[in-house]
Length: 374
Picture (cartoon, rainbow, N blue to C red):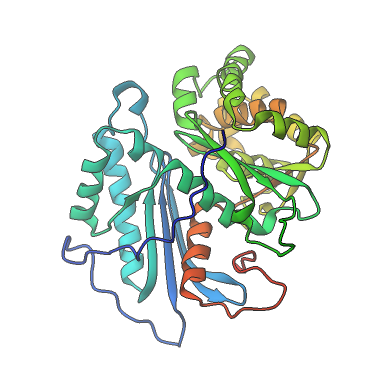
């Protein structure tokens, strides 16, 4: 049975509590007539990411960004709790985000935490600590909301000539999988991409917990196969799996990946001397190219992965776990093409907030939120 689609309205603007910490000051307006400014923060199991943007045309322009690997979920699989060192790392990153938010007069903000805080027995305590020490009020979102936001953020990268797409987001502690079904609606009208979300599931596997169970530093071919074998049976429980099997077999469904795993693969494929988001975002990879890239990374030792400018030391022990999750998805649903998205939850939050505020003037034949001008 297909899970219900979350159609709830965008929550109220997140509160930035300036009284909670001396590190947060009252927002001040910038000169130059810029704005309005919107902010989206995503605190995941592995990363802390912030985008600040202003509406532009039918999308938005990013005016500030921040990203740091904090490994908030490190060790949670063994203890069920967020570790002190991990919380300290995350709070230090969030203090930087708080300063960035205080630098602008923010018209709307949404600050979310995902799997690590959902799963940890002390997740709510951590959220309170964040409020006390940074002034930021985090919202622990559901898996369903996470899936919807991923679709909203990646809408413009779906090939509208296809019959659909399988969107996957390989996170640190979980991975979201969404079937976007582009079958036309009976009313004949164009709809938002989130309206095409047919069904979804959240897998309890991500790069952090899989690498902790199987290893990430020195990974043999046998260990990599064991990672894939752990993930593969989980996909059998995907809602409407048989219907998706038939759609994929027809040959007009493509994969759409949004995560550090696929952006890393694209950077390696493009042989970039340093990671370049503008070249990676939207890249198409053929199925054979994806297989060759995964094989090449599995063949690398840890030092070689560290030395690669699109992997580096922070991802070297996690990227193979992500590749194993990707391989399980590819083997279950073999699609001819994969599109790479260097965008996701933050972009989805920005699109939803701006759409709810009506900052884009309606234009015939265009769907609000389907284009990002960042």
